[in-house]
Each structure stands twice: as structure tokens, then as C-alpha cells.
Length: 355
Image (cartoon, rainbow, N blue to C red; front, side, top):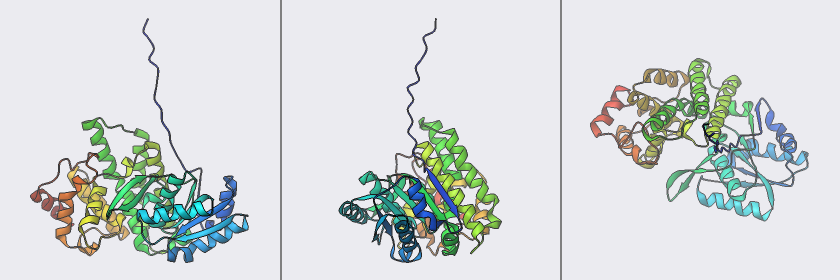
């Protein structure tokens, strides 16, 4: 008789319990927090402009629902700002944090909430990247941007009227970040085949689906239209969920993100994260032997950059970033392998019209 094998698999998934997307939903932030059985003191983390644009509204709706609220303004996504938020949260005995704004405020709040072991609510004012829903935080340490494990938001409150009113460049950058899932998943599959890295079929399907939907919706993504904000926001949420299911940022971060992080280190004035990821995706899809023109055309239709010139960047920075990218998170295997030669870097950038 054959001995039965026990299944010792163990998986922990942290997903948002509540996702509220739509017109005017920021006014329901207090209700969302009450429905989640949160109580006590709340600390709002925001930038100066986002506090005025949305933070004050969040403060009022929380107070109306019986919460004691304090606010803290953060200036940059550095670890010092994270510690500042943690100190204030400890002083007021905050029972939960709210990140109100773009990437900076949300990344700081989510990492601080991880260190403090208290819940975190994500209230994005722009749909510029998938960090508004994910369990990773991009933080600057020693002048280098690093991705660190953080809390997945307990809830996401995304007001499409606010997101649609934000500069369109931010929404277009969010599209670039979502479309980059295409090459991120290809890199993940490659690492699975060549390095036996753990792979989630479910997470990869969700990730690719979000990129596909956005490419197919490219012509409907327009400035100032709330329906566009709705489409992009839903895709960002799905991308964040894919990462939570996988327990890693792999479904949404591969060689194109390495390229973007390399540009951050090399270019004196980097473009937006999602813009750089979009341009990186064009080139990485070429290296994968995929349909890079489809990526290029979709980004062009949306109004996102597709070249160095459109990112207001010297062509040499693109080449240098391609040469350096494989050194970013070297433990994460991608199509870049051990690195490109200068000739190969110039060839991919020229063929894909990035330079």
C-alpha cells in the first residue's frame, strides 16, 4: 500500500478588506473605518498639497464619525520621514494610519504601519503607480531607493473625482506601471524555468489581465475624464491584489523596474516611476521577443512617454541604465541575466525608438 504524502504547504495572503472606488467616496472615509471596527486615534500622513486637496476632507469625515485625528506632513520618501511618523504615532497613541496623497505619503504610512504593527488605510489622490494597493514600499535609504516589505492597506478609498482632477501626467504614468506587468510576468516565468523560483499561476493571470485590459482601453484613457480614472484605478487595485496573492512584487516588477531604478540612480532628474517603467517595458519586451510595438503604441495613445526625449532625458542615461539595471536587486533573475553589452544596449534602444 502506497504511503500518503502529507501536504505541508503554508500560505499567508494579506488582502485589503475593503476597496471603495468612485465619485465622492472620500466623504465616506470615516464610515469605512467604522465599518472595519477601527477606533481610537487616527494619524493622517500627507504631503503639503495633498493635505489641502484631500487630507482636510478625510480629517473632517473621520471626526464626524467620532475619531480623534492628528495630521503629519511628510516631505520626501526617506526613512527619516518614516521614523518621524512613527514617533508622532507613538506620542498620540494612534491606533491606525491613513496615507493620503500619491506614492510618497502612502509608502511612508504603509511602512510606518508595518513597524508599528497597526492598520493602514490608503487614500490615493492620484493613480500614478500600483504602490497605492501593494504590500511594498519604495523608500530612500542612503540616497538609494529600495523596495521594502510593508503592510497591505486594510482598506483603499479612491475618489475618482479627485484622481481625475490630478495632473494627467500622473494617470498616464500609472498606465505605464500597469502595462509593465507584461514583462514582469515574463521575467517571473523565466526565473521559474531557469532558477526554479516559486511561481503563482493565479497571480500571473491577474497581472497579465490588468495589463491587457489597459492596453485594450488605451483609446478611452483621456485627461479629466472620471471614467478613465475609474479604469486605471481598478487595474491598479487588481495589480496590488496579484502581488498580495503571490506574496512578492514579482507579478508587477521585473527587468523594466530594474531599468527604472537604475535611471533613478543615474539621471540627475529622473522621470516619474511609471513613465520610466513604461519605456523600460518597450525595450524589455523586445528582449523577450514579444510584441514591443503594441506596448509602444498603447503608451503613445495614452499620452505616456515612449522615448528619452519625451522623458526630457539624455540618451546616454538610457544606455547607462540598461548597462547597470542587472545590478539592481541581483537576486531577482530577469531577461537581463548577467547584463547587456554596450552594443546590445544601443541596439535595443534604437530599434524600439527609445533613442
